Image (cartoon, rainbow, N blue to C red; front, side, top):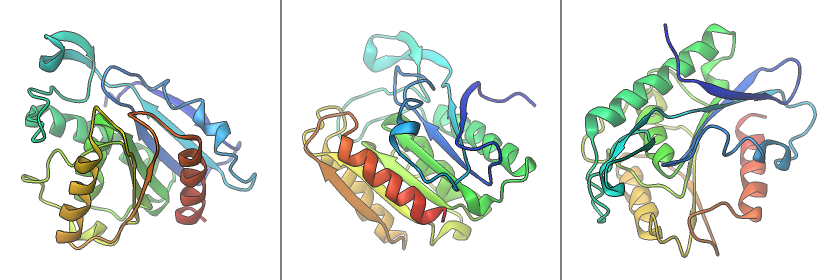
Length: 219
């Protein structure tokens, strides 16, 4: 089977947990690699961080320019019309990475799915529909792109979810992150939410909060 190309960082020589972390539009799997040492995780926590590279495709909102993207975006309004077939294909590709980690001996209950912006939209779809219990779902500066079509699995009804967003985000306005909260609550999920004085980026305090959350769900 072919898998997405990935960057991989292991915090110890032996690992018993995995974090699959998806980048945003036009970025790459290299984007969040430098954050791993900044998390300052305890030495006894062995995590394999996996940063997949999205395929390069034409993106309508960028005048058809070919760039790394998990799916095509057709409009930039609050509805964010997207190519549903492509986001489902990306979700399937991420599911394959989860299954690969399980085949390597990592329990699904020790796997966190994380995503920034477009990657977060794929993470929502993948984690909430996955048929084995996961350790957590982390959504950064993102939105719930498949909220109207998703058919969630009851298996991850109680998955720990943490949403992070910038108060001044001009790309994915904070209201879109808060809208995801309302949908998730309607689906029966509890979650944590934190916002920061930033735009479409990552805040130093956010990195610290992510570290604390990962330690909590993977303790």
